[in-house]
Length: 407
Image (cartoon, rainbow, N blue to C red):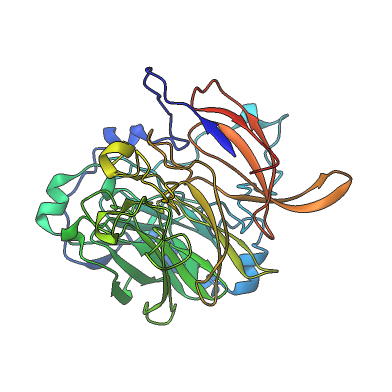
């Protein structure tokens, strides 16, 4: 059990991502164009593009499990979320000799995307849904896709027009749009293969994270759950052939379902939040995907109705601020662990889930490591969600203590 205390001081938290502010200096800001792909027109670039396109191979499940050393096929490169490249040509002894090979200006606006790199092509998701394929060796543009966003959405601007990642699978590049579609583009041409509408952006739904391919399915988390959308957010799985939805898991527990009795008796239409605004991690051995969930809304528990507790009611507000372990085939919940109950301080736990096998009490255990805004590193057993240990990394005044026997 965690003992939390509400102090008079305001709790400030720093997100774990860094926006690329240099993109705001770009001189290449352009109006949104019709939904189309544009090919580079320079003869030399066309020749170079043709050469590199010849080498592009379809991305298989085996490649995602064990990517080529020079490829970066997903947000954290590998399913275990390590974010580590095995390339060793650049090292401590020669890094001082590096120089600029080429530069490419991104669209003006917040840039948070991790590029995809495959067979010598770099794919980048610019602000406001411009996707570009570049020759990774030369920086030349191969193709470009511009999405024609609704005028009101584009005019509003801000972080909802920025995405953190894309996915690559078979012969398709898959990305989430600002108007809440999942889109698949042909790797070699940038032409639309399929376009799936997940929800209505006019109701406040947003994609800020991106898709993730695991077990032959496209997985995507929904955000925008604080925009007066009752019932909160969800994670969906989609068919890579056409984008059709396969299953949906709601990140706010429904009444009369497991965890549904943790909202102080509130009806579903009064439950908000639990965004899944980052991508997940995946264990192929157990076909389990691990996802982090954000805080409940409104931020203050008295305002949302989970405090003060009513007689006989639970108030921890599942599945907010939790780690979810989902079966990739069915979307069924295998286990969950809630890091912070009834969060009233906007302290998301929606960051990376890193999978490692580590020694604990003399045995090698299958673990999952994560951290939330309080800055407490927590290690769980990824087979069942049991808590192994935690460690404070920064000063924080929310969690007073953690009892390892009741966690």
